[in-house]
Length: 332
Length: 80
Image 1 (cartoon, rainbow over the protein chains, first blue to last red):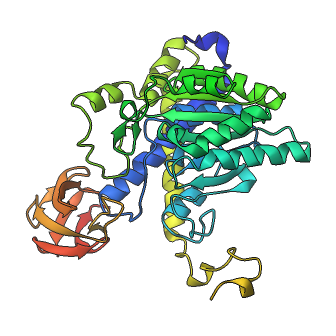
Image 2: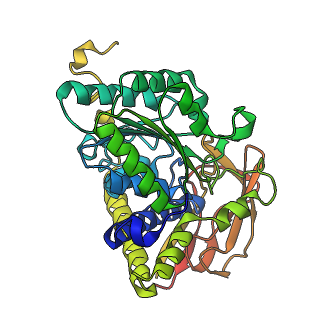
Image 3: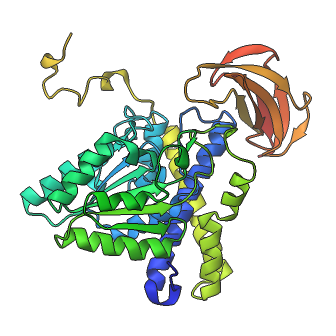
């Protein structure tokens, strides 16, 4: 799909997309630098390279729309409006985290922003998204639920059950597959016979759309359509966003399993500098405007990290809080 | 003058310790942020660790020694 910057989205939306993408990139870069130098001790599954998808979701969804994401969710969480202090706080085990630091990197949720769950098990998010969509329908609310997951998730039984049920009941769900071409260390073509994840949609009776996952404008166009369909009662869409995971499965992954040249080629298609070049070419923004957006994103990240590092570590008495409504029911 | 602590990084999910394999700069050397600083070995994978700040390096760790993740093995004295 070829998109035209001048007709498809307004300059305000273009600016918002670039703000979000640079914030997501800066948050990943700072975390990566800190972990690599030993300054920060945490586990992290990097989202670097997948920013365009999360930024597009950020501008297409309402605050009350729901999101279920995965352990590779830093970008998704930022896009949906979770404050960076609460994300970093969770990753670094501080009381300022979204779950007061006891969820960790894999389990960040913030209902005030519509983020209901981050999952650690591949494929476990879509059934929860179906439940959230059923809840919205029962409550008479017109909110939409997005499930964000990778290519590997679409090979699981839980994805199949969720997609089937969402289609059968025309639920207000958008299934956003961030096809980053690897499931952990295995290339996608080693785990599925079909070439395009979007083709799976035909088996459920829902539209399947394949889009360049590094093109934020194409993503906004496709997501706007899918969200509108879901909100107006037209049922779910499977949106396959083709992208790449620039830092491997987990932070520190030596990526020895990648064919030579693949990472270099993917880096050349990095969505953040690519969008910057495109914005400059379109002429609504100058070098100084975009430099200022990047500077503001980097400053916001430094400020959030300083707040988190100054915050107390998660206290031991958090251990059984929020686990049982009545702790007397807690198994001994 | 501030001090940036040089620590053993967590370069993999399921590790609790790593071996300090080699120091890539001498005691008292000047480094710039991002310069190669030391080597660690985890899960039979060697990783080169970059300097997290610019300044003068002072080592306290010993090579061929296994340290817990997060252990301080030196400092970088920075100008500010």
